[in-house]
Image 1 (cartoon, helix red, strand yellow):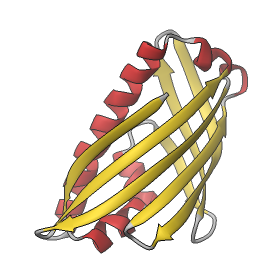
Image 2 (cartoon, helix red, strand yellow):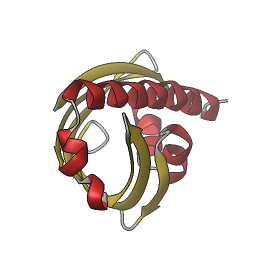
Image 3 (cartoon, one colour):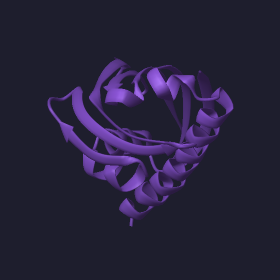
Image 4 (cartoon, one colour):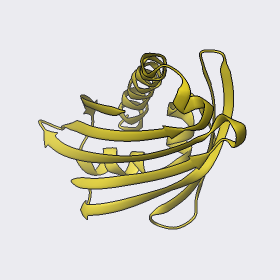
Length: 149
């Protein structure tokens, strides 16, 4: 499954990048995130709980941030396991461009699903992903905008 998008986030690029790397900010902004711990400057452990159609699942996994150009461009690699629900692997390329004191965030995400979650209709998984992303960007924009005050 491939997902792309662009969002404008209030605030300078360095502040947006710092917020994207802050587990506490992400806990407040990602609706399905139950736990996130920063293990090092580039590695995180996370647990998500979600419902997709009839399937309720909890996935635990690792995320790795691979900067290509500091706070301008980076890759996020994730891998998680949900037991009987299956497994998920993903990779996102994120580009941050500053414009007039705001940040244009562009992402390209590739996700591979296995097990029960992988057998669900792609449209069902896509719809859930779209809702989670919309909620994240709404909360994240408010979080970063509020931090500027």
